[in-house]
Image 1 (cartoon, rainbow, N blue to C red):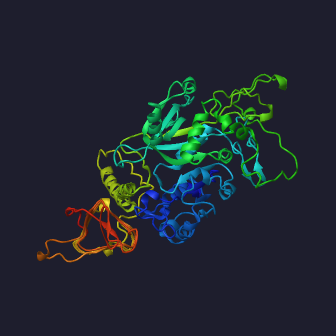
Image 2: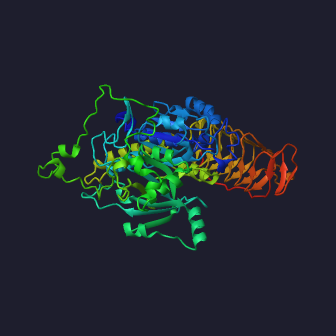
Image 3: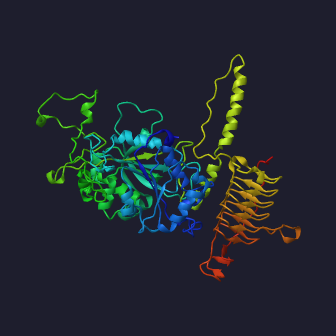
Length: 614
């Protein structure tokens, strides 16, 4: 893995563990079970961004969470088998005292506890992101396009604040990189949030990028906002107004509305100062990205945001916390790395006052501006670019998706359950090797086929404990995951489902497209389709006799809250089974509430089928 063989990539990772308002059925007890621990395909949600960072070689990771959820996350990092299997060092849990469940993502980075921990370029991720595309690809693209050596953006070194440009370049500040993924196509989620994003193409490279490069899908970001905000603007103005300054600077603009911001941001260190100076910034994806993109072409916006002072200042956001001077009290002269290159063609030697300044008009990185006291008011401000990776809509693109709603949780878990396990791939490779050995003995052996690479999100095995399945029973192993200590009763039928650890599936149960979290008990003869069952809930079962009219528990497209009991004989479709507003509540405007459950509707039984085990 990269983290085991490569030196540090110089980035920190800040993973934001939010409240999960859109998954309130399963996050009602945020003190013991916050959103970051909700299982996706049996792994805790936060496992996916953590694993992505470790595979990229980023090991300096901070999990930012409200104080009420900190103890639960710390306990999971020490006890959950999936999280304890991650490489060392363990991530730090950061719980600022003023951080609440409603604090905006922009406000988080103004909290002193967060600012104190960030000492260089950093990556911001949500806890609900799943990214199958390797992070090293984004990291390489950022480094190539932003073209800076260490120290170009400042930071906190061992001896205190790093001055801008101390890495030796005279090209100035680095920019950033954000990621968008398509919301349409195969396995898309209905009514998923989308964003309006506008980009301009990068300048043509001197040397063509390799086939594996992400460069063809990267552009300069010039506009970014949620589609809901775009609709409000269109409704208010009767259309979408475009400034002449945008068209004057960029004659070729590509606009998209079927993509969503993945909330993965590669940020330079100086962006912290921009957030700190502008208290109106509440949201990273809308305010920081939106204003930063517009400041690149809208005259005067950069000065309003204070970017002239931010980009020209050699100080850092945390200089007041890390005051330090060089040990010898001397300042080193800045080294012109370009002039030392053996491939650099320098102009003829002249007096320093007659030397031609370095042309940075076409550079992707802005020149470091001098002190504002010596800058004329009319001098234009060059803003470092914010780049946008727009994932192409191919047949089977690598999975990039935010799992922040119940439908996304169900769809994504079932999608990951279909990935071939490491056990299956190993068996397939052994069979291919045997076939190739036999074919090589023939006079005209066919060309060998390369072995398929496992997905980084694949599980070691589809069924962790085969001994827990009674016979006869049917489990569709191609699209089903059964975690450790799962017991399945006789005559059970499980198709395209994910079953968490320590679950009990009774005799004659039918599961189709369901997700069961840890410790769920499903009684005899229960039929579930398209349901999500929270931790340690119970769906009561019973015997089905000839004289009872076929009464049984049938649930379709339902959500069941943690620890609750669904009575035997309940039939419902599209309902959320959650605790009532108050004890003793007997009736609600939308239907009857029995034993604290909202019950309404009726469904038919599930389908037969599957692959028989054993």
